[in-house]
View (cartoon, rainbow, N blue to C red):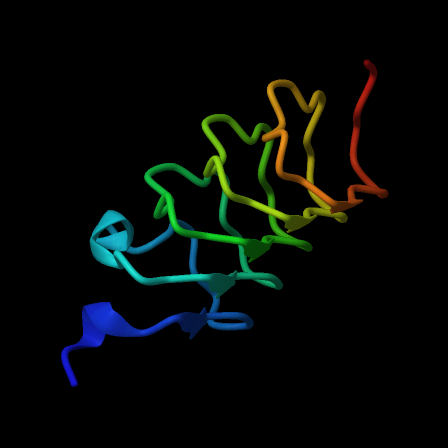
Length: 101
């Protein structure tokens, strides 16, 4: 099975400072967990994502989230604002950030 066909990907607690450069190639990915790392930004996420956990990192902003995203867990970061959340979002956990608006 080629690695890009997986639907769930967990790279939590791996001491990463950035997401893998090939994230956009995971064309079937539905669940992605990158919590408990030192990641500062989350770009080029697959558009198929429905569940995204990026909690306990050093992220300052989340832009261009996938349009089908239903669950976003982003607590414990340095996010100052959350704009343009997908309309499909059903669950949001964003405490312990620096959100001002």
